[in-house]
Image (cartoon, rainbow, N blue to C red; front, top):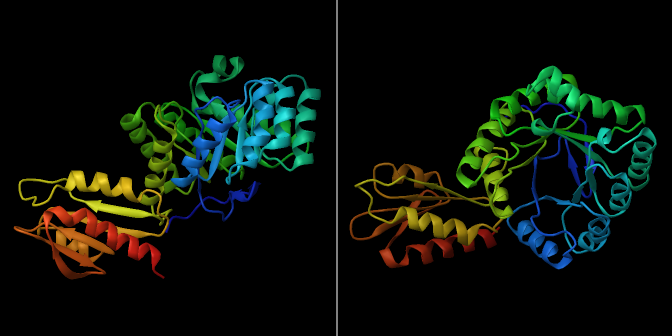
Amino acid sequence: MLQRRKSRKVKVGKLYIGGDAPISLQSMTTTDTTDVNATVEQIHGLEEVGCEIIRVSAPTMEAAKALKEIRENINIPLVVDIHFDYRIALEAVKHVDKLRINPGNIGNPDKVQQVVNSCKDYGVPMRIGVNLGSLERDLFERHGYAPEAMVESAMRHIKILEDLDFYDTIVSLKASDVPRMVQAYRLFAEKTDYPLHLGVTEAGSKIPGTVKSAMGMGMLLSEGIGDTIRVSLSEEPKEEVKVGKHILRALGLRNEGVQVTSCPTCARTEIDVIHLVEQLENATEKLKKPIKVAVMGCAVNGPGESKKSDIGIVGAPGNHLLYKEGKIVRRVNDNEIMQVLLKEIEEMANGD
């Protein structure tokens, strides 16, 4: 069991981030926030595949005003992303569960004070989000693209809030460069107990972005660093959630939903493993109950993997072996494999 870094606990809507709270999974909408129906529809789809916190951008006052109706029609905490304009922040904070804003970027101390006071009044925490690509000029001139610059930037924003007696803060230190991102989080984690939102920003398209996110966040999570995560992909947001779930599962930090063990196939394979696994994962992505399924092409590793799974199929000449709770229960023909697996999964998901 991984030993997590001790961090303070911050309430975000009906969830907590940090402390002993489970590591939560976030994503961000790609719709125009002023299009309430499209935004709510996308969020509902993300909820179905396991998104637990959703962030939207509010670049205009119109977008900030749309947040009220969006929040009323979703079931997970709503976070708003604000840059530079404190007036948008003051409107948005009335309708959200968390504000993502860097206080040093919204103007003079009076403007910051107004935003902080509003957050206190509405019980809304803030996330300070430091990105390597948008460091303050003086920090960049002194450090360049160094992890130390990111940490100094975060501490600078934190001090602004602490001087105003505000501590309901979550911090992120994101970079598209994995080693710098990892080092920044490590350095920051040694300095404070603020909860950390992990992410490799601008990670890229599905495959390279998945690899970079798994490497960066995986290293930190395995060291106990991180309280909530977001995978940033140039992809449909649902794919971000799916990848995030797999990262947490791989480290034993999640144990929900259908988890498929499958072989990479070779000349011994007696079933179409690749096609079966793709169909199976798509058909079961919304299930919450933890069920382990093995899809194995032959008798070399198939029986061993199937015996330690809840349900397993092992390819064999002629017809194939169906395992349930570690035991062979029947033989299955090629044309009924998917139907049988889904039936067994459904019965297990609906059982006690």
